Structures are given as C-alpha cells and as structure tokens.
Image 1 (tube, rainbow, N blue to C red):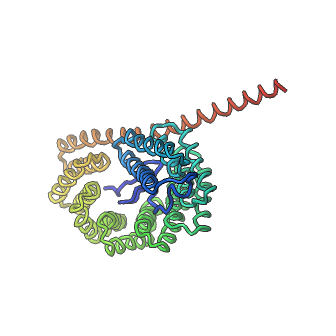
Image 2 (cartoon, rainbow, N blue to C red; image 1 turned 60 degrees about the horizontal axis):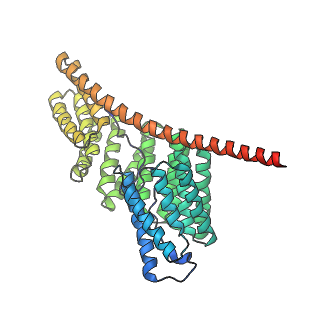
Image 3 (tube, rainbow, N blue to C red; image 1 turned 30 degrees about the vertical axis):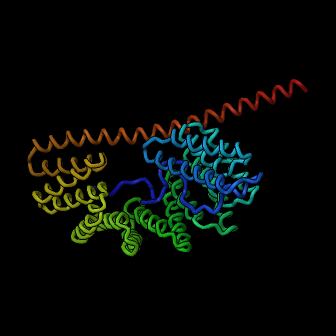
Length: 404
C-alpha cells in the first residue's frame, strides 16, 4: 500500500519542467520598449509570436519536443523587430532564455534572462522584470545554486510587493517550496506552502491555494507525520475543490485523506475517501490517482481478510495504471499481490506476481535514474562552463598583467 507519489505541480497550471513559464497576466509588450514609431498591427504580431512561443515551450515541457516550433516563433519575432527597427521586447529575451535552456545552452539561457531583467527594469516594465527573476529562480534551482535561486525569488517578492503585481508572489513561494524540497528542508518547505496559501488567498488565486494545502497536507502524512494537521489541510483543499468544481484536486485530496486514515488504521473512513476519490478521478481520466485509490482499497480488503474482493480491486488498479504506464503504482501493486498470495500459501501466484513486481520496479527505477542523470548533466555542464569562464578571466588578467 502506498500514498500517491508526485513531483510538485499545479494541476491545470503551467508549472512543469524547469525552467517554467509562470502564468501571470501580461500587461506589458512591445509598446513599452519601442524606439521608433511602429504600427499597432506589427506590435500585435510581435506580441502574438512571443505568446505562441511560450505556448510551444509549455508543450516541450510536457515531453513532446517542440523546440523547433519555438525557434520559428523566435526567428519570426526577431525579424519583425529588426525590420521595423524595434528594440527586442524583454519577453522576447525571456522566450529565448526558455528556448536555450531546452536546447541545453545554459550560458546563453542565463544571459538572455538577464537581458530581459535589465531591459524591463530600465523601461519600468515591472511584470516582465518579475517574470525574468522567476525564471532565474527556477534556473538556479535546476542547476544546483540553491541560495542564488532563493535570492532571485526574494528579489521578485520585494519587487512584486512594491509594484503591486498580481500572480507573482504566489509563484515565488511555490518556487521556494520546490527548492526547500530539493535540499530536504521540510519545515522550510511547509512554511513556504503556508505563505503560498496566504498570499494566493489575498489574490483570489484558487489554484495556488489548492496546491498549497494539498502539498502541505501531504508533508504531514508521513515525512512530518501529524494526523490532525494533514486532515485539516487536506480537507481545506477538498472543500475548496468541491466549491470550484475542480475534479482533479477533489480526487487527489480525497485519496490523500484516505491514506491519512489508513495510517491510523481507521479503515472505514479510509474506504469512504478512496471511493469518493474514484467518483472524480475515473470520469476525469486521472488514471494514476484511480490506480492508487483502487490499489489501496485492495490492500485494505487484503488486511481485512477479503482476498477475493482485494483481487478484484487489484485487477482494476492494474488496468488504470497500464493506461498511462504508471510504473510506480504497478510495481507496488504487484508486490502487494505477491504478499497476499504468499500469506495464503499460494507460492506459485506469489512468485508470478513477484516477477511482475520486479519487472515494473526496474522500469520505475530506470525512469527515476534517467531523471537523475538529466539533473546531474545540467549541473555538470553549468559547473564546467563556470570553470571555463573563470579560466578565461584568469588568462585575460594574466595577459593584461604582462602588457603592463
């Protein structure tokens, strides 16, 4: 039996692979940085191309590589700016930063982000400046410079507070929570979720509120085990999701509440919330949540001695997991089935299911290892570039010294 494993994300909000484009409303565009008169039509075209570029970046973050399409939007916007002798808008530099990060050109990515921030600051385009700072917060988190990441988020919070920018501060607290999770600071992570909920409530940003309560409640399920805190936060998330008719958060929070009750052996309540979760996850095709709920209902029935009912739930859980290649759920479900057969003396089926557990466990480990290798590669390339820059600077200083 397992809780739902997840990387922090906002269901329905673009906050996927790093660096992410945060969904804050844009009040800025080309008009703030135009050096020469230009038609409203060209301005609209440039802004439209930039917007489409960011949308293609979001598609790339979901796994379908669209970087070529992103490059096309960048080139088109660049040519239009050059044709009309318009200085590149800050958000075009930010789009380039996103693009170069996808292409693993980390040095250029960082430089473009800094150009965005500098131009936006000079033209008092505070929203674009804030987006650039958020990007760098994500960038340095991903490349392992955690204190620098936090510094950029804090600068952004200060800027957003001074300029009364909406949608920015919650994004920063979510980003800092991610950093805290990476470095294993559970209390810091929890505090940033609290601040995320607090600031999101002030801005009526319900998605961020839901994420804050769901994620913070998840911390108190096991890592910082506290039944009452988990129950309170997760039920806040559940109630708000029902009010807003958000089936994803309703399904997720219900499943987590079910796990909270199971941890304290309150099986009836656990069954109630898992069944409630299924009422929302199955129609909305949240297959991983459905698989987890069905698998946990199986385990509860196994613990209660209802093996036939447990087996029925296990089969349904496997069907849901197979729809999305959910190796995590598949591996623990087959392990639970193996244990069930072993307890009943059916060593043949216990072995068959153990073999399947091993198969899917290897797949899950492989996928997690691939993620780790990607993270390590990013950090290695950034570190290597920093050393090259340091050596070049040292060489230039030496040449200057010789000339003197």
